Amino acid sequence: MVFDAILQQALALSAKERSELTATLLRSIGPGDGEVLSEAEWEAAWAEELGRRGKEIDEGRAQLIPHDEVFAELLARVPPR
Image (cartoon, rainbow, N blue to C red; front, side):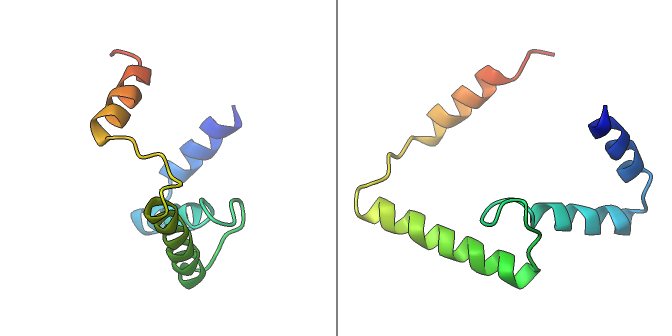
């Protein structure tokens, strides 16, 4: 699989290179999904997104789910070891 090959190559990198790769991959997730943002752009995009979500909560337009329900649902999806 392509993923496995990329993972093996990534794991062969130095700790510094893995850290840089991780930061770059994280900046490609979220607002602007797929586009690698600079750290400042990424922080600004997330600040905007968090502001939007906070406004939805304040205006009662967001459905809030208690954290214990969220974690229970997530744990139910994890296959047993």
